[in-house]
Length: 402
Image 1 (cartoon, rainbow, N blue to C red):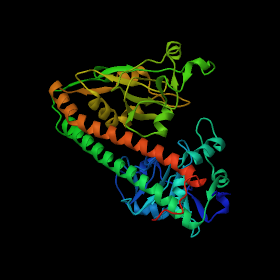
Image 2: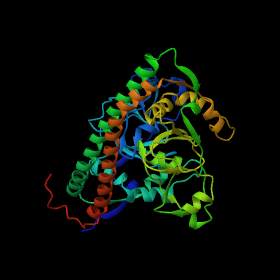
Image 3: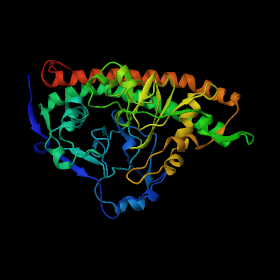
């Protein structure tokens, strides 16, 4: 059993842009709390919505805007920068007022297509490969609405759509539960950092710099002209794009690895497990933890924490001070945090006992987060394997009861 392949412009959906007019919110109008959640690229990930870093607008600003307001059941897809991340505005989302930014589209389904079926198709590797083939822009990838509407999906009957959505949603629901647990653990650790090192900070702690917390390490890119420098199974080599595509806290590999020869013939430096990766340009501020030996391209100024400082403190210090670090970036074409700027950025230097206490608190939380992230990757791979088999009839859904 196979299904008709149809263009999105030929099915019963509305595709809606965000409001891009004169009332579009300026940076100083975005609030930490407010009436309407104003989505950023950080909120729409490969695993759906993530609400760890939110920005809001007032009710007055919300009422001035036209297009771009979500309704329950709507699907959101990112169309600029990080292209192709998809989320669905289900009843479980805890915000009643949400708007998309100008780098997203809303897909609103009519009565001839199951929105959860479409959501699963749009987030699949099968569909993402289409995006890669038609997206425009080299410095900042884009997926224009007109291009999106020309993309194709398999279109079974409604009963089959329901069954495929049901099979895949059970996996998606487990991923969402794991993600929510990890968000909660992250909030616990972040709150303890603020309490220990900001609210209850000891006035006798020394003021130093990031170079007192660990070694700041840059990266490099082996020549793309030499095929022998790259491999699918070698030394982990991370780029900002890898952290953009995968919002995991713990990173073991990127899209491609490099060989021993590639490492030797570039300025990339091998760093140990527990290194805190910090993207220093294009864009500034992706933060992750190396879950094994890794190296990076030149878009990073990573920190290998000193033993007495620990990974946890460095990680949350960077998260807490991200805006301040961005403010000292320089450059005319694009902003960049240089190695010297990173090394000399002001930092508190707590006593060793307090640092050890924080590391002990975070260690079991980190282990649980790591395990749940790995489970989510496994579940995602199962989902990605199932979808094409469900769509081409290799797995018959006709007998599935939902």
